[in-house]
Length: 407
Image (cartoon, rainbow, N blue to C red; front, side):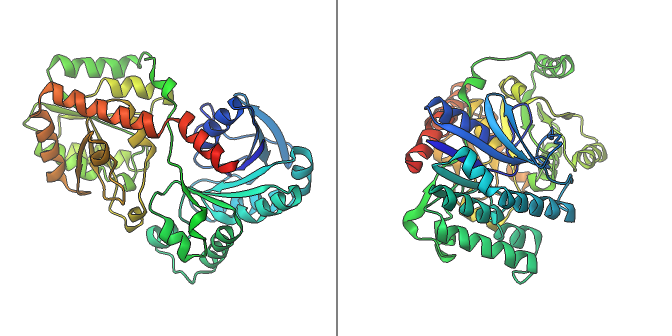
């Protein structure tokens, strides 16, 4: 089967996020399929961008074929990001005949945060006589309406809404990363039988071996362990959405207890979080920069309890599965989940404690509850998370489930 996967932000382990298209493609190739990923040359989530001399070029990235479309550079969510989107969609439409003739896809997957690429995807699918699949990562335009405060009558929102409705009508299958999004999609014109839930995944092989951590991080962890500290950990972006100020406040509540917090990562709020910890005179909170993705298993393995938080958002009623949660489960550590969502993975997997979001007292109580448990109980919680994750989130499994949808 020839699979054309269109994802504006597609990355790889060497390029940085977004990883799902790469890992799906790799598994599909192992099954004997031919895969081409179509992506933009510039994407804000990637750590490395493509440098192109032409409007589009073919690149082989770690064994996967990519067709890269030249787009304007940008950062963040300003107007230049819109120019970047429009440039990608316009050129994808312009070269649709060439893409169809050269690759001859049997399946065309429109897989992106925003749904505008459904139009050229539909055109390529029609030219090729291919099946059209719409994969939903983010619920646009609902996300910018509920998270960004846009009016549903804003011209940009109206354009995006038309594209979403068009996708639900014309795609033969709609693959959703949101488990509870069926009702929303039906409301916007999708037939219920088109809906398929396929969650985020994990590469289990990446957790089979450990790598040496940077000397300064390793020394910090060892120093705290020598002091018999219980290590509470957070690894990921330091942004407003991650609700980390409540975690800092919780460490103030816990400052007289034998607990240390290690926060690994970067983000727009990191310096403010560091300043807050200084203002509170915290001696139990430590900050460390981002580390390479392949070091995450080794870092999480050294910690005792892991924290994941998100600000309260109505959008989460559709269910979420953050990549960080999947990583935490694979680390076999008890998890404190501090967010509300339509799906509660920690409770479902029995691998930690779920609490209300942005509540420092609840975080402190959850830490105290976990450290009061026996060592055997904590090991069992961690094991439950890993078992659940390997059964439901291994890319081998979910890529095969996706293949069954395609065929």
